[in-house]
Length: 338
Image (tube, rainbow, N blue to C red; front, side, top):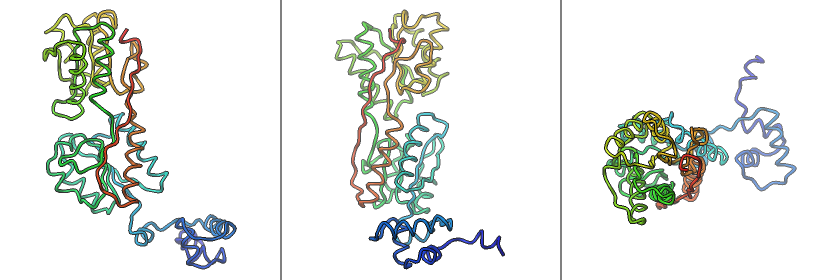
């Protein structure tokens, strides 16, 4: 008998009876509202605490017409930068009383096949997209429910979705301009996957910095590293096979910059005496590479928190009008660039 009492769900009626306050007032207070005195509110909350009251989210969602849940669709949970974004988003959601449901899609997946329908079936109040491959999914605009608030880290076909991120063209500009200022003229770049928005934007910034300095853009100084350490190391080898006069390399991510540094060691080149290196992202490892890596700081945690704040504001206000939020980036100079 006692075991049944211990596991029985404590209801609002139980809290009302314990506190000696009406059911209606108790319900409002437990749902965060109610115009009552602080003494009455404290009595209700104390009774709820004493009884071990846990809100019935299903019942609350019926009353509020919301599930207090948001969906997050990502590409790869093992990506450290993406992890920082997710932590920022999840902590902000929790701070505002929302739960987060997450799912990932395959590297070549579209997200429209199962991820988006699954989120909509769960009746989430909004969706956060953090999967770069979805920016190439033309079907996405047709699958999204235009009444459902959606925020993305990347541009979505059709342009009807709010975005939060950094100015990737500025990132390429800052990194390359820094190397130009250091006196370099043969500046190579190891880029991510071709065709991705982030890759092309950072490449445009690289070109702009060269043009501003009166330097000619040379396709022989561009090599794809696919965001991976080993691929970036191989890309660096190919660059130096073609052009022995390279004196600096801008890697579009710190992960690839690690591969660049590895390749330069194999080539017996001193950094930065023989070749300077600049990365991008400011990952935790960047200050601890040999030598410490000059990089562009990208605020991944803050981006996740800001994206979630925007999404929850859209949910609260009922607005689905697209907006674009750009967070600042800045250069961090360390020994790798001299």
